[in-house]
Structures are given as C-alpha cells and as structure tokens.
Image (cartoon, rainbow, N blue to C red; front, side, top):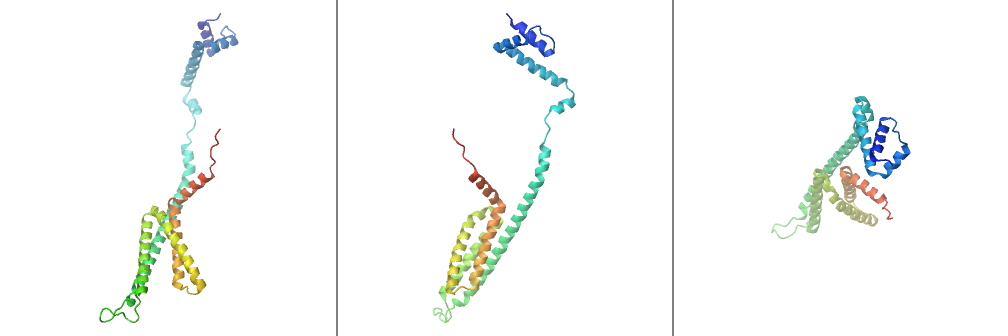
Length: 239
C-alpha cells in the first residue's frame, strides 16, 4: 500500500520530468482520494510556476503580461469626445445669445406699450374729468401686456445666465403659445386679427424653440437618450 511519502516523491519527480517509479494512474488515484497529497501537489504546482516566472528574462515576462490598451482606447475616444464637446459648446453659446436677443426684443416691445398708455389716461384740467380720447381700460391692458413682456424678458435673461433653469420655464412658454395660437386662429376666422398679434405669436414660438434648444444642448439630450433607453429596456424575467 502506498504511503504519503512515496506519492509525494513520485509527484516531485513528475514535476522535475524524472521517472517516478510508480504508475501515473495509481499516483493520480491516490491524490484524488487523499487531501494531504492533493494539497502537496497544488503547492508544488504553484511553487514550480513561480520559479519558472522568476527564471524568465524580462522580455519573456513582458510577452506574458497583458498589454496596456488605455492609451490606444483614449486615442480613439478623445477626438470624438472633443468633437461632441465643441458642438455642444457652440450650440449652447448660440442659443444663449439668442435668448438674450429675444429678451431685448420683449423689453423694447414693453417700452412701446407703456409709451402708448400716455394719451389714454389723460385727465381734464380739474384733475378728475377724463379727456375725450382717454381709454383707461385699454391703458390698463397695455400696461399689463408690458408687465408680462418685461417678466418674460427677465426670465429669458435668467435662463441665458443659468441654462439649467430653462426647464422650469418651458411649460409656461409652451402653454402661452398654445393659448395665443388658439385666440389668433379665432381672430383670423372672425376677421379681427392684427399684424401685431401675429408677430407676437411668431416671437413667442421662436422663444419656445430657443429655450428648447438651450435645454437640449445643456443636458436635455442626455436625459432624452437615457429615458429612451429605459423605455426600450426589457425587464428581467423571473425564473
């Protein structure tokens, strides 16, 4: 019957490439059923592998080492990343400038509306009698329209300064355009639509588009892509 020393000596001879004097199948059968000899065989394999690596030359060791592909990967990704960053920067800059220009247009419009209220609130010499051409209600509507446009201009200036805030203004501007579009269509059908009303509708549409452009170039595109991926993802099936 084989003992541990005989089996371990045969295993050492096998690693050294020398004849062990024992049949390999007999040794393997003993190792399979003996935890002590199996542990000895595993330690011997590990030690032999370590010594083999230590004896290699540097050039041979480098051949066995996995190559560092980080520089290659960065070289392929960096140009695309720079191109995307440049496109995003240009788009965001142009859209922010457009918001400022639209805001200036609303300020000019509001000043003109306030100037038009001057003759509508004139009073007589006694300070109480309204002038014949006075129209207080129209003056009030013009003042409210001027206030609305000034507030919208302030919001556009704020969004141009902090693009991340534009997402909160988009629903408001979109709702304004929707209602104004409906009122304009009604006035066109009735025949009472004016040129200023159509210009205001077009300017409000440009405002909404410019704000949407700012949102997309800032972070909106990434959010839309993430939402699209979530919608297209398939839930894991339970086993």
